[in-house]
Length: 291
Ligand code: NAD
Image (cartoon, rainbow, N blue to C red; front, side, top):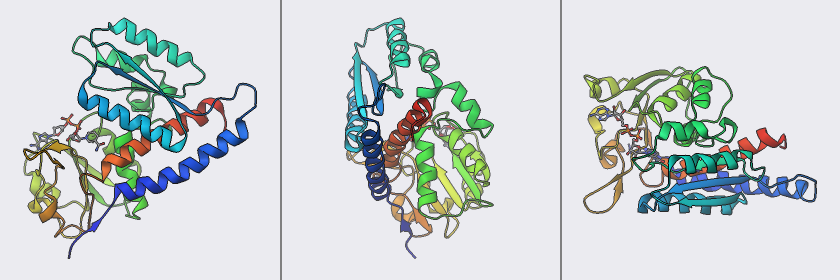
């Protein structure tokens, strides 16, 4: 039987609609009050990498859609790391800004870790700051990276049971694999993190009730990896030779066996941006005490 398609696009549209109402309400109640600022996100881009420009544009557009203000900053490719950190310092202190996002990758002469560390943890809406990473690992309230949050939201909104289930995460990056594994663990799944050195990967995956693929290799997860009825979340974004975007999962054959599956595009991608908006609202509430 063909799998249920978990549409991140539809889920995102619903969440954004609710968020729009929430932001309007916040603004309606706050406007005119001394020291009131509507929720605001600062988006920094260094250089004019075309892919980064598209991501930044989409993020700003999504902010506008729900009524979050966005402040864009584009530094020259040759800007120094000190210049970037000075800008981040200014934004850390700016009361109009509740979230700061620095689009990665940065030019090679910059130290990404140092730049991430310069962002105030309470405005770190990408959830990349080591303070937020540490809080996540000990199960405390924090800002969590958007893609892992999006994966969890897809599962939860679809009503998929997580507690007690076996979950295999393929990929151990700091951006996706590790944090999504921690989120699944916090939801009481039994989690295995697989990676490029994992042996007998297909066999391991066939034990999983939930597979989260974050590898970056088109069509890597085939039907041989899938237990009938398993839930498959495909994080991968790969540009195919024919110019189309495809996931890490061989969708056509896996969807014949899986119980539910996310498509690419239209699965994790839209949810990632929605979670960025959600994180900005979350940071806003924490910083301002408004809810
Ligand atoms: P990464 O390159 O940092 O990590 C890839 C991981 O895959 C590594 O941990 C590696 O060990 C593992 N891996 C590589 N080859 C493997 C193999 N043969 N067997 C098992 N594991 C293997 O990538 P990332 O940043 O985690 O991103 C992964 C994918 O997700 C990419 O396609 C990326 O574009 C996509 N992505 C999508 C979103 C989104 O919003 N949908 C966000 C972030 C990343």
